[in-house]
Length: 239
Ligand SMILES: Nc1nc2c(ncn2[C@@H]2O[C@H](COP(=O)(O)OP(=O)(O)OP(=O)(O)O)[C@@H](O)[C@H]2O)c(=O)[nH]1
Ligand SMILES: [Mg+2]
Ligand SMILES: [Zn+2]
Image (cartoon, rainbow, N blue to C red):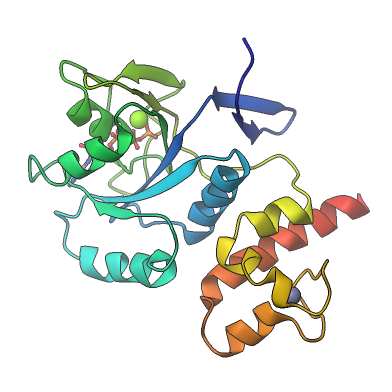
């Protein structure tokens, strides 16, 4: 059947479609294992490219130290069009209604590091489900890659939730500079103010993004993620 979009992951040997016809990417982070901010930015770029909405959930907020992690997420993403929803399996109804409202009648994929609680959240949202979940390792404090395949479940109120295996890093297939900058909406929104229409916002003169950065109007970590992703394409081009 024709697909309106396709989320693709790059493995060592091939491009691998993960899911198709996605409306929303739910980027699940947790207090533990601690979020990888680079990974969140990569998923946001993927969402903008599909295109699909992105929601960030900070799970396990029953754990102490959740405040500083929430603060850092808010300072990085608070001004961007990606809602941040806090959740926890230990405060039974905690924000699950808010999440359900955003997900209903949509096809949503849950993505993120292993052990953040993707499967646990889906178990809580879909009655009578019993997807396998597993405690994170006591030693490494990382997940154990419990979910090994991508599976779609129906949401009772309408819509579909897709559980996916946790990733160490999400490797997107090679992207061109244009797709990367489109994935950083705050950078893209300044493009028309740069001197050069094809500005890459790296070292060009009269670049509105570099100016905005100096005035703290763009988050520095986001800009650094942007540079890292841009550097990867440059490297690929040389190979
Ligand atoms: N304290 C706490 N633990 C949670 C919460 N949500 C999930 N967990 C625990 O975190 C561990 C990992 O949860 P999973 O649902 O298996 O995580 P996952 O993201 O599906 O992991 P993979 O399938 O490996 O990608 C389990 O022991 C869960 O019980 C939460 O809100 N609070
Ligand atoms: Mg899982
Ligand atoms: Zn620029």
